[in-house]
Image (cartoon, rainbow, N blue to C red; front, side, top):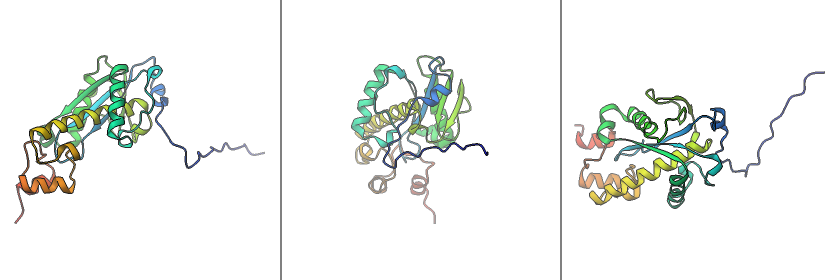
Length: 220
């Protein structure tokens, strides 16, 4: 008789998949300090790229952690406030000047490295959202594609990075009125592109990004 095959049961189409603690446990948590790492701001035309590294306490973890893109601004702020009191959070920033000097990918790796280094305690393992890990990170690491929707610590990092960067962009909006940074957070929306065309690029626009580069150095 041929061996029986195990058939995985499909979840109902309506089932909502939320991040869990499985990847952290695979990495040795809670005996080992495992952090999740994610970034915000790779795509915008203006502002820094911000990364966060978060070590969560699974026994004292707020409900509702998820990929920050799946949460509205109010819920992100609420969760970040709770995380600030029950998790270890490190923030890393790469400036517009660094983005223009080394390119956005390398600047993102730099911000992630800084985020891990700024944690109150040095982690022993990092789960990094995306398809690659920063080469200079100071602990063992694993890249997780779509990790902000899979691992609780990466979801927490995505929230921390997004809220921190949004606050920075709101401050830039006060210093540089007219661009609407507080609304589009530096992304290339039609309203933002119209403002750049009307006002010219600010000191916080990324000169290495094509829309800004083309405005500053138009072709014949």
